[in-house]
Structures are given as C-alpha cells and as structure tokens.
Amino acid sequence: MRASESTNLYFSQAADQMQMPDWMRKLLTTPKREVTVQVAFERDDGRIETVLGYRVQHDNARGPMKGGLRYHPAVDLDEVRALASLMTWKTAVVDLPYGGAKGGIGIDPKTLSKREMERMTRSFVDQIHEIVGPDSDIPAPDMGTNHEVMAWFRNQWEKYHGFNPAVITGKPVEEYGARGREEATGRGVGTLAVKLLKRINVKPEQCRTAIQGFGNVGSHAAKYLYEAAFPVVAVSDVSGAYVNPKGLNIPEVFSYVIKNKGSLEGYKNAERIPADELLYLDVDLLIPAALGDVITATNAGKIRAKTIIEAANGPIDPEADKILSDKRIMILPDILANAGGVTVSYFEWAQNRQHYKWSLDRVRQELDRTLSDAFENVWQESSTRNVSLRTAAFILAISRVQRASELAGWLV
Ligand code: NAD
Image (cartoon, protein in one colour):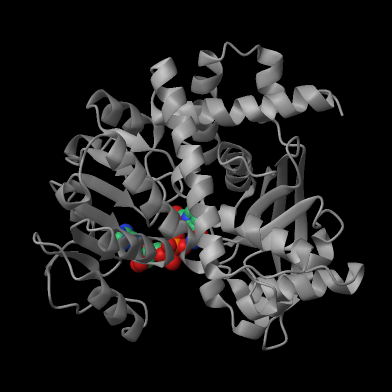
C-alpha cells in the first residue's frame, strides 16, 4: 500500500465515526500546496548533479505548518504528501498551534561528502525560501538530515530574509537549538509507555519490553524505561537483536553503542539473535523504533506482544493493524507516540521567538505535561466511542483541525 493510501485509510476510519460529509473529507485531505523543485549542486569533482526536492504543505488551519526534511533515495511526492498530512494530525493531537508539512530530497545522503550536502541544502533553500518562514512553514530534521543541515538551512534562508532562527528547528544547541531536543522523541515514548501501562494496570517491573532500533529514538526510550524500572529484555539494530530475559543493563548498552560508532555489533552481555526475531518475542510491550512497515499482513500473526507503542513512523501497515486489533493487542499510534520530537521543536521555536533559553528541566516538564494531556484526551475519546487508540487519536486531531477551519471560515 502506498504511504498516502494508509494515512488516508486511517483518516477515513475516523471520518466514518464522525459521520463527516464527503466534501469535508476531500477538503481536509487535499494538501494546500505541493512544490517540486530542481535542486542542482556541484559535486566535489566539479560535476553538476541535479536531483528533485519537495515541500508539501498540507494544512494551516491551526497555525504555521511544521514538518521535517528527509534526505533519502525513497523520497518522492507521494511519500512526502503522506508524511505532511501525518504532521497535521500529529501537531493537532498534541494540541500544538501548528499545521502540517513535510519536505525532502530524493537522494542517498551517504553518497555525499559534507560539503556536497551543504551545497545541496543551500540550493534547495534557494528554491523554496519564499514558501517557508517562522509564520508560515517551519522545517526540522528527519531521516538523513541533522542539526548541521538545519544550521546551513537557516543561514541560507537568512541571506534572503534576515535574522530569524525560528525559521527552522532542530538546530545545534549553541546555535539557537533547544536543550533536550535530541532525547525528546525517545523520552516521549517512555513517558507515554508509563501512562499507558498505568491505565491497563501493569506495573513497570512486570512489563518485559523489546525495542526494535537503537538509534536516536530507540536508545532514549530504552534509557527512560530502564530508569522507570521496566525490564528491557531485548534491543536491536541492523546488526542483530540482543536479548537478556532478566533485563539488559541499558546504561551499559548505551555507553557500548557510543564507543562502538553507534552500533550494537559485538555487544557481549546478551544472546544475539537475528534482528527480525525481536518482533516475535514473548514480551508485554513491543516498541518498533526503526523503520516503517515492519509489521505487515505477512508477519502480524507471529506477534506475541500484548501492547505495541509505535515509536517509528508507520511501523504497522493497515492490514496488520486490523489483524493485531482482532487479536486484542493494544496499539499506541505513531501520531501520538512519537510526537515528543515535534513538541520540543515547538518549544525551540517558542524560545527563538522569545529570545529566551529554557532550562533542560523546563523542557522536560513541559514535554511530559503536553504528552500526558494528549494521552488522557486520546484515552477518553477511545473509551467514550469504544474505538481503537489510533482511531481516537485521529478523531481528536481531525476535530481540532475541523473546528479551526470552521471558525476561520472554510474557504480562507
Ligand atoms: P536512527 O537512524 O537514529 O535509528 C534507527 C535505528 O534503527 C538504528 O539503530 C538502525 O540500526 C536500526 N535499524 C534499521 N533497520 C533495522 C532493522 N531491520 N532491524 C532492527 N533495527 C534496524 O533513526 P531515529 O531518529 O531513531 O528514528 C527511528 C524512527 O522514528 C523512524 O521511523 C523515524 O521516522 C521515527 N521518528 C523519529 C523522530 C526523531 O525525533 N528522531 C521523530 C518522530 C519519528
């Protein structure tokens, strides 16, 4: 299923519950603007490379549009369109004053030197600088981009429009970035896991947890859960899955990975099994925090976890979602589960506009409060309507966008 089809399917399931008329569905799912641009830049050997860049601005009823920039060979208009609409629902479900957008370039960043990456980024900004800005559309990092790319983006944009660091988030901390941005998504996953488990009366110590992916999101989620007394019995990355039924020593795994250039390869104090096997372990909580579409109709039947938190974007495809729901496996959906990152991005933007830097404690407190409120709202919606947490999250998000559009006037 194409990326935009699954997003629209989840939208439709919620819209059916809301008895939304067809004209409104079409208006809310059609992006405001889609831009495809030529990005030409010079390679280190003097050749001129030409690739395609995209920015899709899905909806701005609730505020300036917000969404990452992805550099990946699979980036195309359909993927960017799907991710842009997910951002609209994600910002709405956590009640940030934003709409949704997404952008990217269809290229493998591993094939670029640092200077080539910089030239490509600056060329992309030259093409899209007029449609992004602190009050209209604020990019952020995503797959294949990082705080350095954000710093180049800001610098190039400011050449046209003057000083305004709020044009982009995910910047280096010493260059108007926010403290706590790096840990935010994983920390958010941890916060939400604690809330969810409390609601279903499972104590942290009884919640054997497996986490797929030990990158930015997976490692910080593991750290948070370990500190909250969850036995994290398995973690994985591309090199394999590492299992210890008594619970892994996560601070030790964390330091090992830092020393080992980001990889779990060779970690000794655990049994190593093939990477994909992690998904099928008999655990209480499974957290896919690596890639999209890792649980599909083909392997959903093999999942034994009782609860799943979607830390990655779209790890469960809609067919698998149905199979897992029929098996009464509870799923906390991505639009809520991984919203910690965009929430702290919002704090960064707010700090930039205030010209004031928050402490790490303040960032963490506000993040915990924002996500906890969102969780309670989604839980209530799900109980009241007797629908899944995913459908409840979409209903809540869509209702907020719908209300904002109604108040402003549908056709503005
Ligand atoms: P990352 O690149 O830092 O880490 C990805 C991890 O997944 C790595 O450890 C990698 O080895 C592992 N991995 C890749 N293929 C695997 C496989 N087949 N089996 C097991 N492990 C595998 O990425 P990240 O920033 O942690 O993002 C992870 C997911 O979370 C992505 O889907 C991303 O879109 C989503 N997400 C990230 C953020 C954020 O703030 N970083 C925010 C929202 C959503």
